[in-house]
Length: 174
Image (cartoon, rainbow, N blue to C red):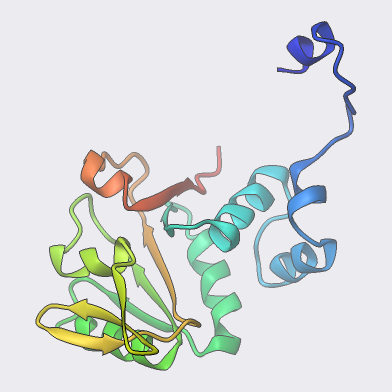
């Protein structure tokens, strides 16, 4: 794209980096302290995780994204669960209600349909309060709620129905 920009007579900077524009260096340093590698790809992935409009689903066979999210979530009392946990929906409900972060780790290629309202951020207002319908119950939605999903699969094939609901971020180290 740089060649095309020069051909069009647009002013360019060969040293331009996206992280210089979208994130504060102090925040990147905090990510690095919390075990996110300092390479450009990891920092760009970190930007997508923290700035994206959709919840992140991180492809993470080496576990570096999982470790980073866990470390970053310590100050927010992150709750860690798996889809195989029999009470994961109760943990999800509590996180939504209390405004804490929730990490669902080691997901496979098919996600539980019960979390679809969370993935699509199907939030509605009743009076001045926000709610999210989880199953048959309307749960008060706290704006500080954070949701993260990781998979250890190196090359997952998610259906388009999943891809449009989350931001898929590849943390695979090559």
